[in-house]
Length: 225
Image (cartoon, rainbow, N blue to C red):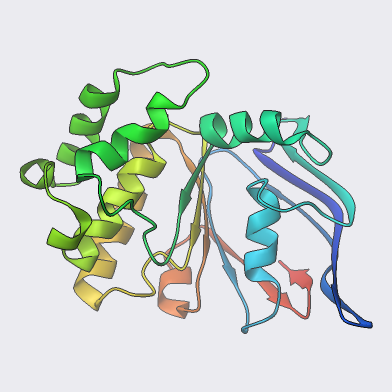
């Protein structure tokens, strides 16, 4: 049987707000397998981003376990978690999070330079990825010199710099026009097909969710598959 890339086991996340406890996640269990494209949908405040953050090792569950490639990361120390995030997980955010003083090439090369075991030449890998996303002629442009769609493609290239098996995207087309959003989705689909990357995408867009292999719906911290 194929081992899941993501194995969420009875995860809860409780947040303290003054004297109140908010149950952001309530006993979530799910598995996501290699090369799947999965959408997570649900109303605002339902726990989508909380679940994505736990999957990416950016947050820890109050109870339960999270396994990535069979390894329990739930109680790992921050140094080891940083290594896991850098080598196994690519992140794409709604607001791009590019470093404004670095060129597109330098932004993409950055994760490779921080990898514990460097598998790629940073400059060469960055050039290859920018070319793949149709941005070879924008390699030496700063983020402020790029359109929103171009910045998001740079952000995807950066997320793929170390060829991670898992890509997590939080509203990756939320700030883009329709044409730019379609370009980004096509790029994600091509990455899955060529590299076997597992992609988990949080979205409010039902049309976007319909393009994925399956959809997980969160309501009040509970997941419905």
